[in-house]
Length: 128
Image (tube, rainbow, N blue to C red):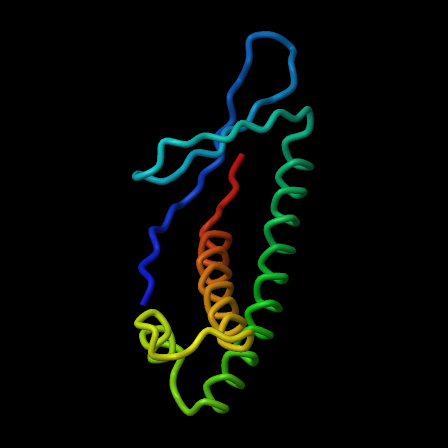
């Protein structure tokens, strides 16, 4: 299976000496050095907006994962093998490349990507 590196996100308020809008930093977990700064004059409204966007992305990912699982199940039933076995044999050129096998491969890779994205989104946390 695909191993995924997880990251936890925190939001911290940076106070400016001037009367400028508030700044919020979203910092990655221990293994990440990336920082995202969001400037807003209304911290609570910005937090709500970002939380809403994350929730919407979670819902979209779940919907897409459900559809992809059905597509993958259809391929596995039709060919009588698991996706793991299909991918192994496909990589070793034991299964010919056709539009259908390309579609199966693409569906599986999209499924893996969306599962990784879903884990990332579910780990996000916002604090002021």
